[in-house]
Length: 445
Image 1 (cartoon, rainbow, N blue to C red):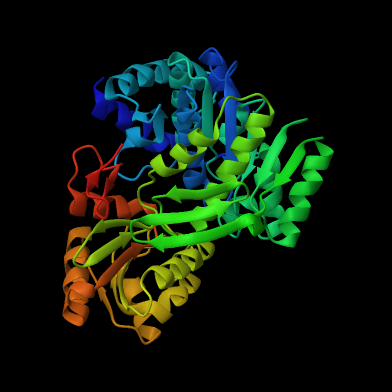
Image 2: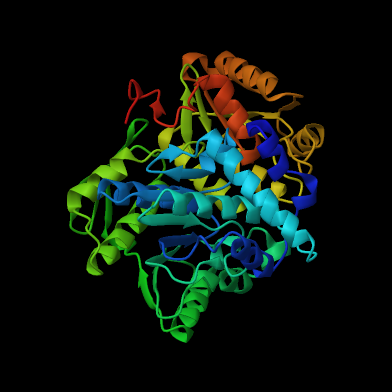
């Protein structure tokens, strides 16, 4: 088996889909020797902001001298992005070796009529790798939900983190905020500790109830202690509680709030004996990079990519664009899944929109680009459908320059299933450009 064959095996149709419950995940890990046991975890669930918050926390822990694992999903450009140790992606050789172990375990399980899902296989590989690499702590991003998510197979956490909760994946999680919040709160452990992004009252109540039932401590991040002092295309500076002049390279006010969640989680770990200094927190925030989230990947015109794929995410994106580019009209590249609330998502960006260029993401669930263009035209918008991402990017940049010259702004959003292609086309970076920043003079460590 080579690397290509390994990825094809992992993504084979027989493993597609999702299945409620942790029974098959438990059976798979038992076949593999239960690698999840004996490690420390920071577990993160929520609708939006999970990946960025996880990345902030991981980098802070790494700055503190801990050997870290980071598990996120989905990937933007390469499968190996989702499994990292001390910031380095899992090697292709390791993917092959661990896939062979997974294939053997899966073969044994099929005799018991147990077939793991793709996400269960990915998660099992990550846990095997982190155990093998002797990680001191693993920052684990939940997939969909929390209670029945494959990542929730772990029995204890150093801290559980809950980011913003809103409507998404309602066919799986439920059709009300109460139901969605209850599923997300499933990561709370008995007698554990939870750090939570401030939520709507109904969500706060559900999570607080679950914490009381499980006798878990609950710390809600104090956003009233946030004071933003500088915001620009190169990054942002802010004060938070006793920390003055904190700095991040990630853009958008929501990232400042995600950073505050990470700082609060670090403070709680410090209270429990973890060796993290103020300087570790500062360096961790500054060193964090998170591709595909309000990321500038080109200049002249400016091209921004963002993985916003639900109404809350698009609201946050729109607010951030309005702050970063006041008074500027934006040419949007849009590709959306057919099962998303695309009507609300597209209406949200209309006040900023100059024109739209539509694409169809690489997914069986994707909304056809022609249909999306028709929907936008019915709203009175200028919309052109394209057949490829490259065609869409070239056209959007051309349209933006025609209207605004070098002051043009293009933003691609709607689905993580295609923005990696935009990133790859414009940055043409062999290593994926994880530390690339066109406003900071190239790569940074």
